[in-house]
Length: 98
Image (cartoon, rainbow, N blue to C red; front, side):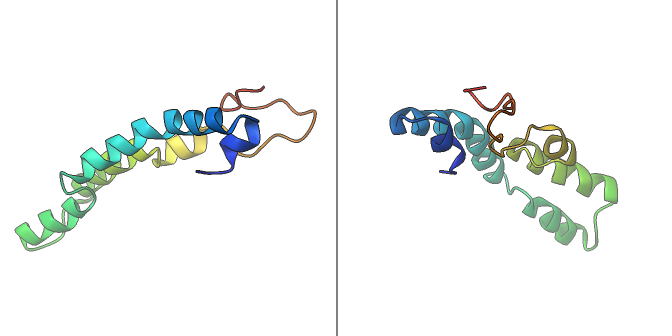
C-alpha cells in the first residue's frame, strides 16, 4: 500500500479500505487483460506474421493494455497529483480531506 492513504487518514482500517477501493477496479482490469496475453500480444502477432506489426495495430494493442492501468499518456498527464498538499494548500480530488 502506498503511503498516500495512511497519510490522509488517521484510522488504519479506513486507510486500507480506501486504498482497496481505489486499486481494485484497475488491478482487476489488468489481471483480466493479461489473461488474454496482455502486451505480449504484439510480439505473438508479429511472430505469427513473421515480421513486425503495422504501427497502428501495435499501438492499439499497447493502448488497450495501458488504459486499465491508467498509464496512457493522457491519463498520466491529466490526473491529479498524488503528492500530499503542503500545509495551507488545497488538496486534489484524490484527497478525501480536502
